[in-house]
Every structure is written in C-alpha cells, then in structure tokens.
Image (cartoon, rainbow, N blue to C red; front, side, top):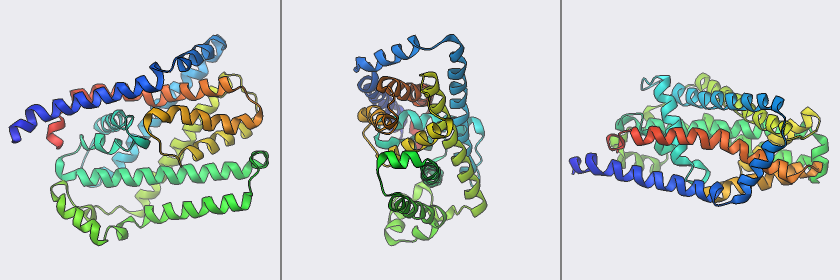
Length: 322
C-alpha cells in the first residue's frame, strides 16, 4: 500500500489539482470575454508614464507574498526549522491549491507539503492563526478608514454607531480566538480529532507566545496596507480622481466587506468587482475602470503567483506528506 501511494497517489492528485486550477481560471477569465476586453481597454487608455505605477504594483506583489511567507515561517519555525525559501514555496503552492476552493481554504493543504507529516498540525495551527491575524487587520483598518471617511458613511446611509459597534464586536471575537486559541483546543471534540490524527502531531504541543502573535499581527497589518495601496495605485492609473485619503479609505472598506463573503472561486472575481462598484460607484466613478482595476489586481496578486505555485506543486513530492 505504501509503495502504491508513493508511485500513484501523488501524480493523480497533481493531475486533479492542475485540471481544477485551469478549470477555475477558464471560468473566471478565459470564458468571460468581457474580462479580457476590460483589461484591453484599461491598457489602451493609460499613458506610458503610468506604466511605472503598474511596475510598483507588481513589485509590491512580491513584497506582499514575502511577508505572508514570513508570517507563516515565524510560527512554524518555533517548533520546526524551515528556511525562507521553503516557506515561500509553501505559501505559493498553497495559493495554487487555494485558488480552486472557496475563500482559498485549500491553502492549508498546500502548506503541508513543506513540513514533515508529524508537523502537519503545527502547519495547520500556524495557518489558522495567520488567517485570524489577517482578518483582525482587515476589520480594524477597514473600520478605522470608514470612521475617518465621513462622506462615505453618509453616502451608504448607515447608522455609523451601529455599524462600528458591530465591527468592534466581530473584532473582539477574532481577538479572543487569536490570543486564547489554546484554551479552546481543550474542548473534548478537539481532543478526539487529535487522537484520530496523532500521526500529524498534537495541537496542544504548539503554544505560541503573545509577543510572537503581536509580531504576526504587525506583519498582517502591513500586508493589508500594501494590498490597499496596490488597488489605490491601479485605480489612479485607471484615471480615478478622488482625494487620496477618501480613495484609500474606500479601498480599505471594500476589502473589509469582501472578507465577509467566502465565495466559490468561479464567482469570486466577479463578486469582488461588484462590491467595488457598489462602494466606488457612490463617487460616480466609471464602472469599466473599477472592474478593470479589480481584475488586474486579481491577475497580479493571485493569478501570477498561483501559476508559479502550480509549477512548484507539480515538482513536489506530495506522497511524502500524505
């Protein structure tokens, strides 16, 4: 059975993942001619001097995923030594699998490939905490930007106190999960699952210090600010003319709203474009510019690194981690 797994299961999984990856890409871009049309229109209307800003966006993508690799490595490295090169591989392979799953939950599986089997639960716990830290950063900065943008609050016609209180409540819940996750792992059903997957390690064996969690939280906030700045730059290239603080706060609010809607991958890009139109449309902006900017950001920040991750995944030894 062991030889069968090593010889056949790994290649079969790779084929399935590759087919799923390109199926999702086909449904999100290739099968939607309007997406390619929007991108073409975007580049037709920009000046050569503005290409420098797109280069900055591309470089920020590298920094964005490097920081994500640093986040995950910071936690895993406490109990299993992993270099930054393998950490980057893990993040990119996770992204390539995650692109075909709702809200990219498949990233968990991809990152398992760069740790030994008895450290798989360590990788999962680190990934859970990293995701919670990113959610905390998204909600905190998004809510703060919304609070500072009173014109946006007035435009969407919501009760600011009610909305802010709701966000604070969600933020507190995430903070409890993030800083006191160890106490929740003592629940009986968690212990039952640990026994079932004992070959993967033990979750309670990997406590993380408060200073380390604060460090990861800092990385997460920096990542979110970079992501917002990327979209801000692309919108500027697209010709959006709004006061810098108003545009940046609107972008942060868009990403915060998007984080509350885990969607199947074939709807993800279009849904994100729709949310961006709902928010930025309040400023009477051109819908084509908004959609084109949304798709271009997705191509730069998700599709390109996911393709690199797919190549790394094809070259990996999946059977060793099963």
